[in-house]
Image (cartoon, rainbow, N blue to C red):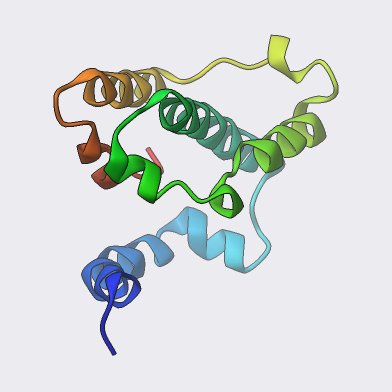
Length: 127
């Protein structure tokens, strides 16, 4: 087999294995996670995806447009998750961590650069 999905699987197998063995993820798989931890992780993802999907909406980069599949968009689901964790007034209750702010700033810098296609390599991280 060949193709992008296979290359991504092969290229990220080691990092996924390491991630799956962290205390947080191991606990998650065992059902031992704490609500606050999941809420914070969801908050991080919300801000990252808000930025990435906003860039995709504003971009005229053909490479990014070719990789923008509506079925892969996560913001609507994350917004539902945010309402679950924080209630209907969630937008006024959350703020990104410093690390998330820095990551979102990097997304915006790359998007504004002469090579916005480099965003393909900036997928969400769990930091």
